[in-house]
Length: 107
Image 1 (cartoon, rainbow, N blue to C red):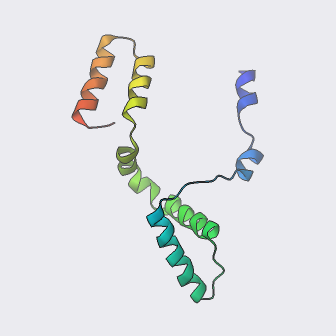
Image 2 (tube, rainbow, N blue to C red):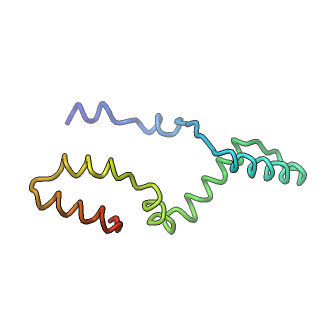
Image 3 (spheres, rainbow, N blue to C red):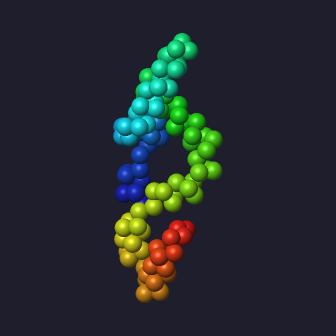
């Protein structure tokens, strides 16, 4: 238990965390156009500020609505199979997982 607590990030660490992300070429072009529109409207806009605001709005208003869709698009079959093999306690569990993969209906 004590070991688990040491590995947990503190609230301070979470608040200060930032990350770099890769954005596809098409989305970079679209963002650049939006930044130019904002600048023409006398706004201070940078790629970082705009992406941060877009993510903030998405998480606040749309993430829960889109969660199932995101799960389908981001589902990793290899990761699922690895997890299934590690956690399975019987052949029935593995067979159930294989049926789920074949059906394409992810739970």
